[in-house]
Image 1: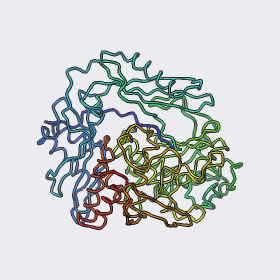
Image 2: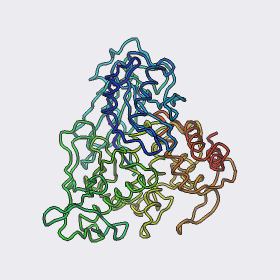
Image 3: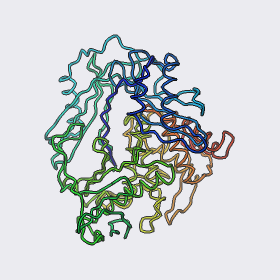
Image 4: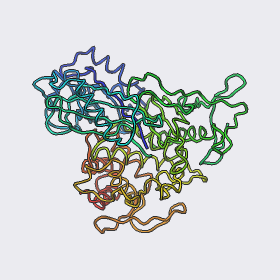
Length: 550
């Protein structure tokens, strides 16, 4: 299950010694302010202003220098007025990978501390590359071909961008190159390659598509309610109550891009209906899977709104959109930050059916939430955490929906899997190794695994924290979750799992967070929510120890 990673460009909106005019620009452009409540809780605009003052006064201790720029990405204001402002960083106007940090402030705006992806100084003798952009593009194209051995790739493009890499040891100038193509069926394949701009050595590489994987009669969820928009004598599958989210038909076409610049993006012709009763419950009607996709968007919106107070993927009240019937027998679904949209393939019918199940929708759109908050790098342990985050929230969306035709469970993609895959789900949170590839326990080799398999560590932790170890039955599904250290873990429930993980993601995690860092982040979140001596705090510590993260 997938998303396409965003193409991030920095801007110098707030730096050490920032002028008052720049503060005003930052406040106007970064995030929409909200009015303070009756309890005089600081607004988001106030939090931004307070954080900007901190950047000016404490630039040195935060590792900022005059040649560095910062851009506010997200703001969280707690009920008690505590403020958390998340920043991306540039160095001489180049994006800094691992330069992100979160400033934590008291209600009165005084500085408490900061969470930083990297604590080392960011400084380079030069930002002039010795390896040319065409050479970096060629190296990335070769990496894409090597990752797709046996495939005939078409329309291969390779777009390098100069960045500062602070994620892999000492900061260095690097080319981040997105290479993309279409396979023999016309479906997209993509890989991001990080190359040392001085030596040409490969620093890292990762897949840019993160695989998974009225009323309407859906394919997987039975008859579901839909909010639509009337247009003349017809209805559009567009929900005005959830930011204008809508679903369109891609017509089995594919993009001529998976990068920021698209020569031609597959269409998304909005579905219409004459009587506001959509689909037939079978795949023979093209609008049936559109019902599933729209319903998945609705339930994901509702989960984040109802449980976490987040309005939409970006937290700005704006809706995303869906494209269904993408490609030819396309065994994938992905979130794309560039179009702010979800895309679903129909599956090959042998291993996978249409990928529009509720937990897949929640999984993919949660990649968008991660992108707008911690922006966990999709490589190494942080990549495993990125995937685990989507599995966790996709699962919680499914439970929150309370649909008797698709009751909540700790199986990922169980509705879309066909017998040809040889198992009854894509992933298993209680014992991830049941898929034959994922790992249950952390070890020093976790960073070297595919992120879909190292995600098992986070998934296993989440299951143990919610349900505990040992055998049990939930909604008719039997589970038996072991621990890696032989301990017995008592669960604290799904609701508390979701609240702790969401706060850790949005307040404490950064782009480089690994599993040890996730333990620290979730313990900080549990302390904030329930207290340092609470049962919940102890359960978080026990669940991490049970998966060998100590």
